[in-house]
Amino acid sequence: MDDFDQTLIKTIGDEHPETLEEAVRLVSLGSPEGKEAIMERVLRLESEGKISFEKSSALVPSSFTGYFFSEWTGWFWCVFSLAVLASIIIFVNPEDSFPLVFARYLFSSVFVLFLPGYSLMKALFSSKELGNIEQFALSIGLSLALVPLIGLLLYYTPLGVGTTPVTIGLLVLTLVFASAAVIIEYGTRKKVTVV
Image (cartoon, rainbow, N blue to C red; front, side, top):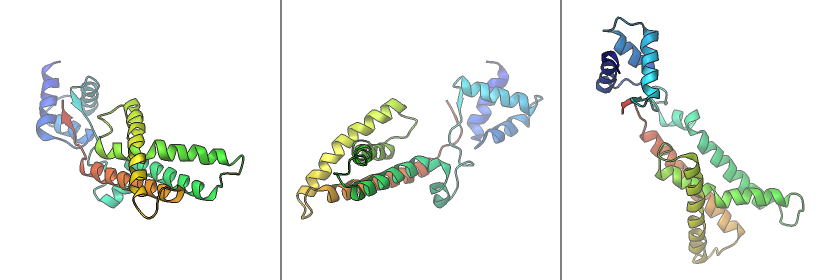
């Protein structure tokens, strides 16, 4: 690493630019090198792990409503769609309809064994803390812990443990955890950091 790389790291660390373009502009002010050469150096330093570009507040919408309907929350809309679709299939599709019962089994398995735990996992951990395999395993483990608790709580209510109360309980729980995760993610937007 040469002196210019160290100057680049120091400038990014001191100024905290929000975008790659802003970082290049800041460094190019006092540099004889061109913007393209500086950008190549910045990208090389990022690939070496010397600096890290994360979700920039310039790319993330400033209002919560804008954020909620942006590409940052695509996972939320997948969870929401799967949970609602599974609930509809459970209520509409009877258990004795032969070929359609497999769709009910498939969607209800995902609904019970994955979605509640995934929503809770997203609320508790950021996605960069865990890899995909860890997220998948933790989602199943948390679901296996949450579903019996819902059943236990419903047992002591007048509703009892049945298909309708359990489905509605899991749907509400999944959507509450997923909504909380979106709120937490919105609050923890990151800027450019020096490692």
